[in-house]
Amino acid sequence: MANKKLKLLYLAQYLQEETDERHPRTLQDMIAYLERCGISAERKSLYDDLELLRLYGMDVQSVRGKSYGYFLGDREFQLPELKLLIDVVQASPFLTQGKSMELIAKLEKLTSRPNARQLRRQVYVMDRVRTHNERLYYAVDGLHTAINDDRKVTFRYFDWTASGGKSYRRDGALYETNPVALCVDRHYYLVAYDPAIQDYRHYRVDRMEELTVSDRPRDPLPADFDLGKYVRRIFDMYNGRTETVRLRFDRALINVVMDRFGADGHIHPDGERIAVTAPVEVGPTFYGWLFQFGAQAEIVSPDAVRRDFARHCQAALSAYPDA
Image 1 (spheres, rainbow, N blue to C red):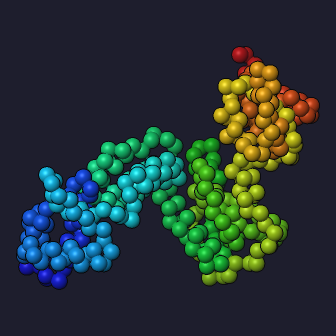
Image 2: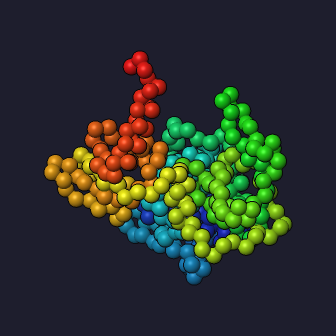
Image 3: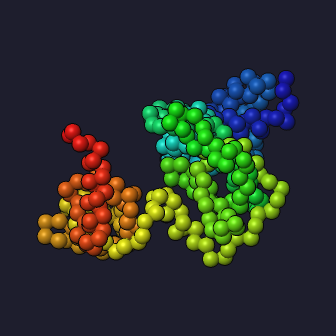
């Protein structure tokens, strides 16, 4: 027989795993469950136990009528919140498929089994390009630790070769740097301060190996660093100059225009089209974004940017001389 002092713990677990608003359980269900756990219980004692769990803070509720019974109401995460978290896990390309399914299984344990079946039906890990590096998960944790504890980190850094192998920078020598922040878009990036150049660098975390949190304290960081501005630059990989550019778009692209420029742009009707005036980091990334819209988008001014974009398009077309 199990220790009767464990009865409250088993009962709390039963309410957590087996009940919700649509699936209440009767006292007889609870007695049968406790018996399977090797604990005998009576109806009267269960009333007292349920009241103790309420006093402890568990939202034990009762329903009367055809589906009479008890269930756990308020939880740390409600079902819509868990669905949202699972969507985020599924959409994360920096998680391996195995790690995604492992995290989803843990999220399912935060609700009842009937609700978990709903979540399981929702699970669909999209056939997207995902990392195969399980170590990324632990590298991110190590970097967070280093940032919180003001410690340096060391690692080796590599580039992919044309044959799919790894080419280590600095001939495989260790990097040592001062981690400042972790940023995530399609990939995780470490923003780090390099006192040798008195400036910041960024590294793709999935291309870091042998990451170690050092015992050495992090170097003092400049006080005037604008992390938000730097993050916007590395996510868009802009390396060009900032120009105020005037553009025209077909009206069918209004949602795309608002997503791209938002409050930074002056947007107004221009005949049958939309005119936009906005500061832009001109360069290959912006040109690549604009190119996808073909004749539906046009740079109006300045003339230098217009000509530069035309040269960018011509260079791309030069790879297809026989087309």
